Amino acid sequence: MKVLLVDDEKKFVSALAQRLSLRGIEADWVTDPTEALERVTPGKYEAAVLDVKMPGMDGIELRRRLAKIDPTMKFILVTGHGSDRDYDVGMKEVSYYIIKPFKIEDLVDKLRGLSGQ
Amino acid sequence: MSETMGKLCGEGFIFFSRANRLISHELKNVLAIISETLGLLDELVALWEKGRTLEPGKLQGLTSSILEDVTRANGIIRSMNRLAHSVDEFVTETDVAEVLGLALELSRLDSASKRINMYLETAGEAVISTCPFFLHGLLFRIMHYAMRRGGPEREIRISLETEGGGCTISFGGIAPVGGGEFPTGREQSLAEALSARITMDVASGTLRVVLPRALGRSPLRSLSTQV
Image 1 (cartoon, rainbow over the protein chains, first blue to last red):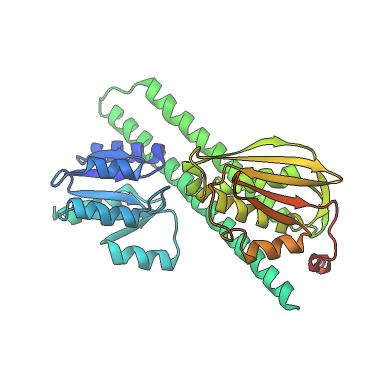
Image 2: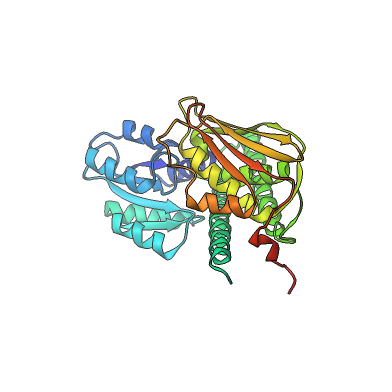
């Protein structure tokens, strides 16, 4: 399974990618939403894990743009915000919405759930 | 409570709430980084126990990273504490450079700050009798606007100059915009309560806040922290 991680916190996203790779999930990562738009091509990634709050473009807008490039891609939103309203907005857009900090097993379960593994 | 006072208190709650949202979000981010780094460290050690090579440099890098994040979290909590203390006395002798510094620290927690370089270019010594909490609130609102309306240089230069007992805070580098966009009535009412004046020089992209040596007739004088 190949996924793209997008989060403006470089240390977070790079450590997460290494931990996912130890679990057999190949993870590329970027810290800039515009770079994510350049990276994604149809069929390249099965799923993307997107931070909601990023400078320039939020994760919800990025999801919409990435879905236009690859309509088969699945998405998980991740955020440090934990309000009910944020959750409601996020869940309208994606199947899963995770609050930071989280257990990696939760993310792995959700990624595997998305890919039907 | 008068209508003016009610609106001012509302602005105070909004500012406090917004600052707390930024602080809690940033702390969650730092905790998430620490959690992932520790998780990775734990997994590398587990792999080493199973016979995989573990480079000491990698371990050192991860532990240094955790220490950096603890320092970062401590800085955020220190800012939160300083903000909480800004209502110890509603009207008091106030070091404007200190208020400006804290407003800048809080504004840098906003993700918009990552796309623009907003910094204190010069800071003279200015001590005035004012309401530090609402001054924080006004400067925070101005910084929020400036970060989103930066000119092509993508930098907002802030300076503080003393003038006749009072002081002027300038925000340079704001993109020229049509008249009337800023300040809005909300900033104007905060400025009025602080006996301050906001001017916007559209041609040079500079916004100025002129603060007097002491509050004039302001409803903020009636606020008391005594319970």
